[in-house]
Image 1: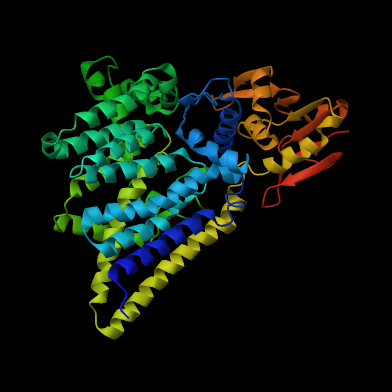
Image 2: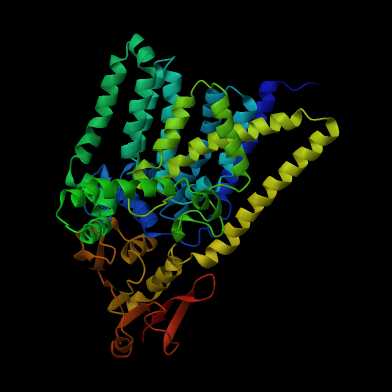
Length: 543
């Protein structure tokens, strides 16, 4: 009995989806090797809104959460509330929105690729490559706002393409793109730029239809966003991380002018000024995101955003992406302009910040590049399928072997080496530390916890499930941490500060949670909590 082609396609895409979901869920309790402060902030604020209708700072149902004065866009928190309600406040509940929407991105890219290239095999190849993508997997397995923003951007662009022919899809497109902007900071620049290009490309078709309802709908859902972006809180995050807050270019201007014979001459000012220096800085950061080292060798330089010895794409994708570029230049695809603009616009927001290349802020870049790689892979398989019988199967087997090698190598680096090399960046050990504190804190008048690790207070709130209503009323000491973000240095009986070895012996009614750097000895310690590489993360002291 012959199997219908539609059933076969459904079976294959289902297998790819299940593979993607499995890779995003497997061993999630152990890897990543911890739960970072930003994840804890999203989870605790969801818990706080669920129980009190207010965030940790007492603000009722905010669209933007103050958090560490980085003013997080609020959509992730609200998406997380049902999972916290169902599963309780735990790591899995907080990560599930990213895991689920990351998995459904695999389905979405299949349909978008099919729209772009009108080819089933290329669409399946794009979905498969996103399912196993190191870049997309990494940010799907944590509570990353950028990942849900990427999903909504993908849905928004797909719905727009459908909406060019069927108006009802334009409502979905407008809503999805708004959701992307309410999800993550970078999308607040990327989405408007993409929307302008989409309208410019298809304004004639859009003008033919009666789209006043869509326009009114888009304006309504974007009004709150406009008020956010024109406020000081909306600008705070960008001001803190933008290249314009970096004094390096200014120092460079002064240095170059000082090397001229007359620093105040027209020539010195014409060639050495803010426009030229910051433009050069931006272009340098922009090109970082297309570097071979970033894409294929070592990836993001920040430990929390990377996997050891791994680029953002597999090495075999050098071939598929280059082939995809060649095919784009050679063939006339219906939506080639959208794909090219997306590739070029994707890293713009990340390039305006001083840390580059930045896989987190440029994550939406993975979609157009996966489409390009899928175009190359699908076409390559089609060409191999035309070989003679023996050569065809040997070639396909060897190609599958190559892909399997790179995927298993990535998984080995992710599950074996990542926990040992980047546990510090993931703030490993807090769950065990807080559990010990909860079991023993009644014996002490005060608990002093090292501030060696990022935003320790929010991880204590998260793992202790501290009553949000009580916390909102509790007297707190607010300050800034070493990175310039606000933090809580004391609440209830907890203090978060550096610990001196000498005070441990003299304060008998205090439980001390110190880092290895502060107290590097075993004398009188009650417990030690280790990183996966068996070096201490916390040393606990008390009477």
